[in-house]
Length: 256
Ligand SMILES: Cc1cc2nc3c(=O)[nH]c(=O)nc-3n(C[C@H](O)[C@H](O)[C@H](O)COP(=O)(O)OP(=O)(O)OC[C@H]3O[C@@H](n4cnc5c(N)ncnc54)[C@H](O)[C@@H]3O)c2cc1C
Image (cartoon, rainbow, N blue to C red; front, side, top):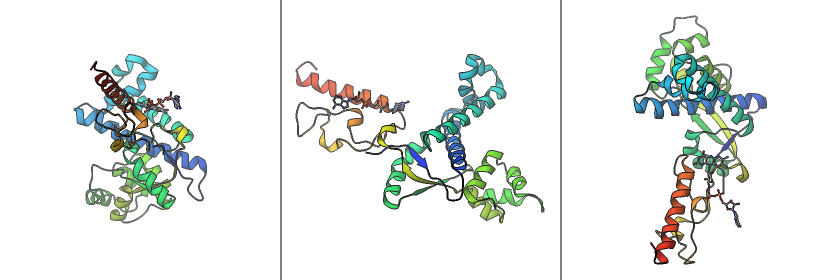
């Protein structure tokens, strides 16, 4: 059984604080893009509205009337939480859950897994390189990146992930922006897991979730061998499989 939460490594030669900051900012950024797209763009909702949500923890319902200021407070709160989680847990978030099984297997096979984060998923490498190439000669790397639309946070992440010397031709710089490496060395232990893989194989239960080998015995929730298939709605899946098993029990008792 394995946790779906992964822990960042400590990169050689860098401090633990640096690794935590990198993990926190990277995890926060992954979730920032995910939430902005899934709860904002995909629903035709302005992105700043999405980020008023976390600010409501401080401001209550007034967050919705606070415009960009409360959205900025929401974003700051989001990254603050991400940093705290990185300090306590390592890299975590809705988008990480989707790839955690592959990361866990790679760590088991090779002792480490490298997650490549695309900081500009909305632009092709070529379009990004063209944007970077527009910078006048003599500009600092930070300025070139900033003028290409990267935030100070993303520039900091690039320096952490690729090393301090980011200067390169536009094509190489674009490739680096689209492949920010985050090295992971271990999943969290079972007692810290939000969901677990392993358990009763789905092939061992019938459609009513009764064990084929032990009629009258049922499996539901985390007893089943699943890989957090619900993208975070685990309680829903546990309730649903519990209800399905209960219906089978009633049907077998002639009361369904
Ligand atoms: C920190 C954390 C945050 C989470 N956040 C969310 C979330 O926001 N949304 C979401 O959908 N899911 C979340 N989850 C996941 C969700 O809580 C679990 O998937 C869900 O609770 C699993 O339910 P379950 O009934 O299968 O197992 P459990 O809740 O683990 O229940 C199993 C029970 O069986 C008992 N038990 C174990 N062995 C025995 C035994 N031998 N005899 C008798 N009793 C036994 C245990 O004591 C326990 O009470 C979170 C999990 C964690 C750890």
